[in-house]
Length: 157
Image 1 (cartoon, helix red, strand yellow):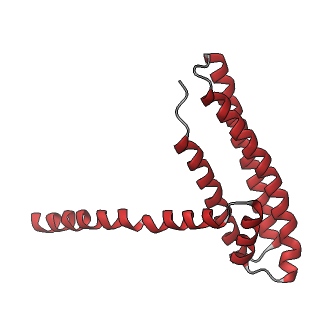
Image 2 (tube, helix red, strand yellow):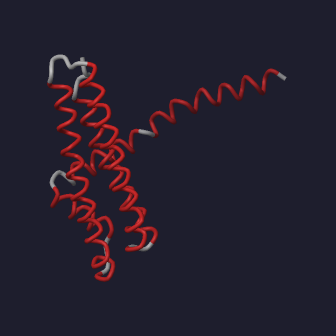
Image 3 (cartoon, one colour):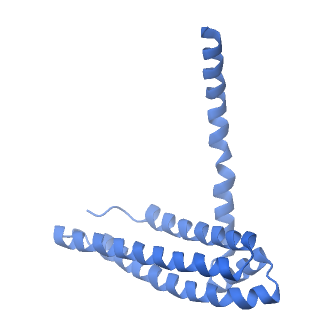
């Protein structure tokens, strides 16, 4: 009775390290995407090559893309300013910290609203697989942006 349990535990123990290594390609993929999307023009070219849009799809998609990028850029600037304000100060008061936290939550809410609008418009503008591919690329880029900001800035004192 104990032998099957020991064998199962051993199998799980062997599988665990393999699972950890399976995550590395995803990180490499995100780094490769970031490298190709350094500037807005590079990002647009990367998206275009990733999606391989027909003329009809492009006509419907690029206005959706451009509108979202404007919202995203404004939101990222707002986010950067809020983070710099909190981190660059040697010490901030509790009241200032509460206001900063409120601002960061409002920024996240604005980003979520913009993303919801993007999802709805993208699904209408593109065939399903192309729509989800674009949404994945956009999500990876935005996640990488937030990770870079979080990993480079120190915690508020």
